[in-house]
Length: 489
Image (cartoon, rainbow, N blue to C red; front, side):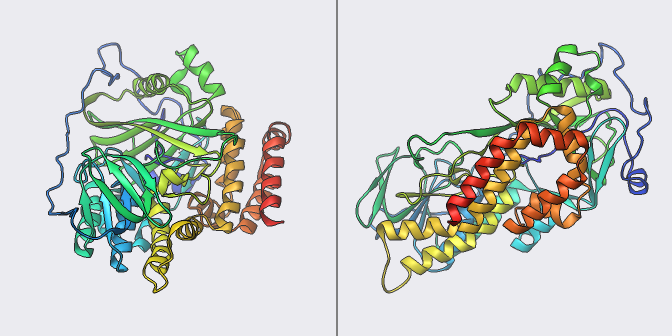
């Protein structure tokens, strides 16, 4: 997934769709999955180099014309959110320029999404693979079946679709790196690595979490959590996964029985495996730390993943692709308004409890494009600070900001849970009415629905989970309540 509650794998004994359907909490018989067959088995993928190097797209793009008039908006970055906004804003009659050193380069990370999130966006052709259900493994004896179709997004198809739509709408592109942004009272300009300056009424930063242009208030604690994952698209001799079912999370730790150091660390800061089986020999595997602070080390993630594969007896023949995914979660919102408007990771839009973001940023783009068109396309031509404030407000409405406080509390709770607490949490969470757990993962619940979810979750929680919340989470709970009171009073 890059995305998280992200993608996983699973460990010892495999469960078929039929078994899971018959018993959402099956007992998993010990020894039903092959264990390591000796040192000759290649379970470590560390020495394998990725063999697949996707070629850049070949599409005609209109280039920036230095002699032309100033743009209504310059969008820095050609990721999914930047291109989606460029397409929509241009289709509303605005002059848009996208700035990126390599706008035709393929996106590096895999994207996963629930099918019901992607379909309403009009992007069904960008779905690469669909699984009819997802599994969550809590321990060696308990699992959850999630009857909600999940899909892998075709990165190439999605980027092609967005670029073609941008080209048809008249978006222009400038191939350079944005170095700085200079603001005047009613306009701005982006200085690029090739010496070009691109003038625009509004500048949008869609470069991700490592934004150079979006500021935070001085003195505000940057208490972000971090999701980190290592994934491989691998060709294997065989794997134990049901090809009709992806594994959303596998929290089992039987693979660490002979790894005392790894097991002890995992008891404190657990990781899970996310798996997307594409056929009998091709599978995407990703070991993920859902959220940690400080960030779990990348080497630790890879060691835990290698231990899983060794325990499963999976022989990796080839690594076609690999990826390192780091997602900054929670923390404060950027200072609003400010001269550069953030989008996606640059606007702290990752779900603070799960890390999911792609479908969410694609879905919010129409509202942002509408706000831009209302200001820049009107006869009044609203510009400067008022324009920036209105576009920021379309991105972070009071309702979204309040809901984010609740999701941040969810993140802070997860940060304080060990492996046993995490398992107990998800045991209760996925026992909720699907309307609630699906809405939570997809950021679709109102504040009042989130409060109803929290009460239902607390009622269903085990005694241990209730004690974890009472003893470990009073400060985050008080902070959430204070922030909500400050916002509404």
